[in-house]
Image (cartoon, rainbow over all chains, first blue to last red):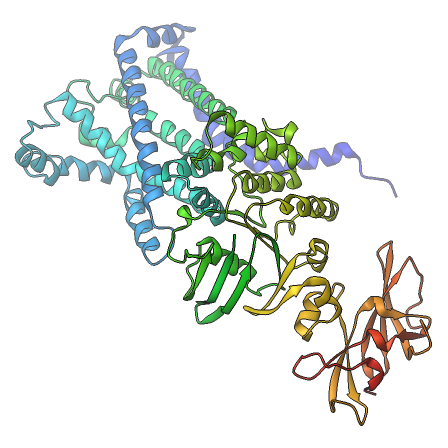
Length: 291
Length: 348
């Protein structure tokens, strides 16, 4: 009897990894390489193309509307995180821990998450209309605010932000709720015995235990809000003016609307890298501070 | 300081968890011993105010505290699991009950924290966080947190149960000294007879939500009033053999004989020893002792606790000896009878 050659066994391992490699190649690597391919060429027609090096990248960085959209999207993500994370945690803390109301609260909170993106956009497009929408009409007529999201940039921005908060805060709340549920009762009793206030209990028992789930919540909400497309596209179409033209809306206009695949390719690669880097920074910061 | 439980009962989902508990303890350590589900934790939770009793009153220093909330009671609680604030250092963990107390300020807090940390052997670990400590150190921290603030009632619910054997032995000895100068009532629950016997404090035996017996633990061990008390205080478990009382004695009929494993020998100890022919089934060697499982006539099992390491062949025939003077005799209701083993015939 001879022992199996370890190298041959290593080959067998490759065979097992192959399905993953193939599917990742088709779903991620090959499409990404097409984008890389576009980003370094000036394409006039499928047969007529010129290699331009890094020209499109320089142009992508230089174009003022790109910079504006970048700052706009960053600002939007920052606001989303600032509102949704504390609000989601507050909702989770307020949700019942046991009894019949648990399932009721869970269903109510999870409801917005079950609605498809474009439907959320359609709902809010009508809901926020000052003439026929319940929300818009209430704000405009009952509260007496001069509100119209199709005409006013600030109104449009606030509408998109409130919509995102409505749609995605439940995700943060559910994650935080799951984290809170995993804290053993004796911790709360110990705090009660010490006479700790509700805030101290939250600060020293609940919050430290939420670190893990909040890291995930922050990453998910950042990535998702930084790539927001469907809802503002449906509600405002990026307007009025450029007020709600976020990076992905700008990008799709460039690539599909104007068929500028070269600049669009370069720009999406930069976009992709920025998302990666920011996620890495967030993740490192959040996991480091816990040590 | 006194702690009185006056006819306390707790019912949960149709089950009786505590049944008419009457208890009176003074300053210093009181041990609460009982098997699993005997009501130890529920009793402690009632004293702490975490569990409102369905009936009855809790009095601390003569004052009825039954309706006073947990926050406003002067208590400290140590759990079986190591409960500390995960985000705070050991120093802050010990300091937190003091900071919330109001009687301590600034340098007094610092002094007290260092004093208690020294006492519990945590002095070098004050800057660490609980997750960086071993289980024994975490439980020391929890005990230090409870000891830091002078309280009327200090409750410890099986604090050593989750620790490994060696740490348990060491902490057990430490704790006895720590509780000696406690200003209030210290209620310590355990399922381990060795802990109760080591503490040698006034002891309450609980069983199925009732107080079975209170008093001196060594006396209870030597002369248990009932089978339940004897079983609770015996580790390794008591051997039970059926017997019949000989004619002309103060009692009659069928009885149960309780024989502690270390009273069973393989050579007669004294002239009155009863000889029992047996077959060896299994020998468990722990190092310092051997637990010999024997099969007597009539399919009765008997375990002998022999000091030292011994080798036996399963299936081998042998003779076990029991000194009748050390046999506990119980009637069928579980009450101990004032009879010696010599007045009883073994069944079969």
